[in-house]
Image (cartoon, rainbow, N blue to C red):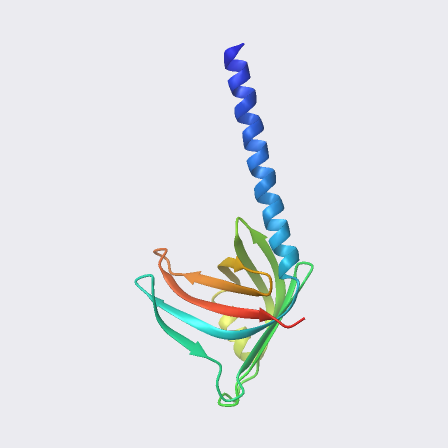
Length: 149
């Protein structure tokens, strides 16, 4: 009887943990819906901030998240290339995973090598950061956004 009680309690705790994690991811996904503008990027080396890159000369990058779909665009007056992309996304275990299906000519060149982009997602009420890691798990950079709609 004692073993059965322990087994039941363990299973119940596991279900509670999994439902809490799923609800948290669902809440993050719903909070992510909207229009976001890049405010700056943070660069890391040895997991320490080495630089903050602010948008200059009219540079703009905007992302739109809507019920599992993403579209992003970038304007840089110093770059003659167009940059945009479209695809789907999900929030899973606190990670933002973007699956880019198609984009501008330059983006399609990049998509030849990778189509899935994974980031740790840190959210606040009207800001979020998507944080990238290298193959060894070291921080590399973060894009930091503010909600504009």
